[in-house]
Length: 121
Image 1: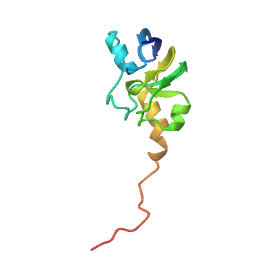
Image 2: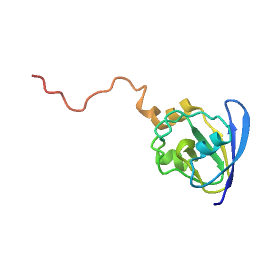
Image 3: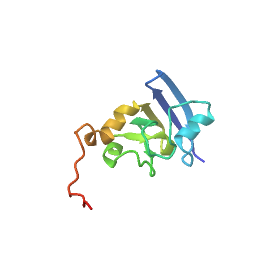
Image 4: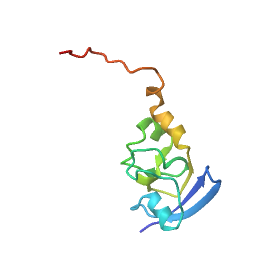
């Protein structure tokens, strides 16, 4: 099976990692198999803890529920559910920044109001 070279710049620790990954295994799992510890939480593509920004290369992330299609088009990916499709260079992102990009427009806008009145018995 073909292998790809994955380079990850961890912005939090300023470490740069390089390892081989196959297209049938999640990138996070390939990193862990090489002893590389990267941030993660849910392992199912629902949060933004393992978010990266793709600098070069291509990946496939069919299960990335935690990222909108718009953010994916802007180059964001979740390592826990991403498969390499070429040699790849990515940079970890701050979880809170990505969460704000994804959900921020819904928070901090005051009290949530119901559009229909509740039936009172």
